Image (cartoon, rainbow, N blue to C red; front, top):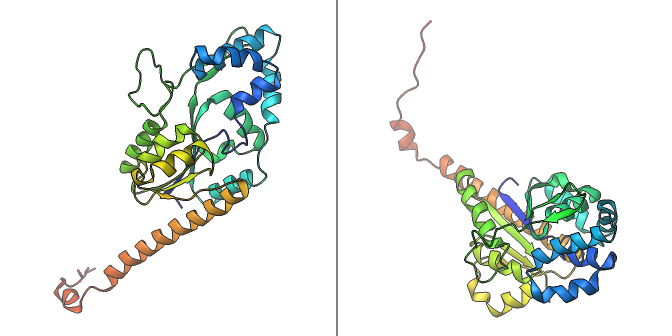
Length: 272
């Protein structure tokens, strides 16, 4: 299944909620978060909230403990492990941040299933405070996409992946997501790719209103059980298509007419 790339959003796709909100709510800073939300971009606000948590005496270990408790549907980890075992190339594209995602996937035992994780950079500074930066520095080099938040255009990340595929041979992509930020990448998918939007979530609503703009085949899902069933079905469908194409190529070689065989030069005889 080397020809299949599966790209997952993270919040409300792999885990059942928004990891940013989960940490803010569980560590008791929701009120301040809600006050500041109208005044700055979400990504900048999360960096500000990490500063606030540190000032309140909350440690990196406190944040990790909350992240390890993030709820997840029981079928998500098995389907990720199964898709990886089948040879699919699994990747994450998320507007959360690297620390939150890596903490959770490491805890779930699925970190090694992913060949790459694309998210907002984060690091622990000398004061032991978590810092969160934008994926794209929107002050010095803003992206031009009006569908996406200023700190990340997921469509640009998909285009970068597609450009690398052209050097590696044909690949089909399956993209899974739920949020408004997953609409832009859905428009970058090509014919032969598959979009798996979470039904009754923002990306589903956007796709329903703009279905003609998508070239990919659309397969919606409601929960982890449905995600597992549909994803494994699509992987099987693509592998069957790939096998049929390979068989078709083999058949072409097998049906060379006899006259062509006769026209070939005789094998070279080696005299000892």
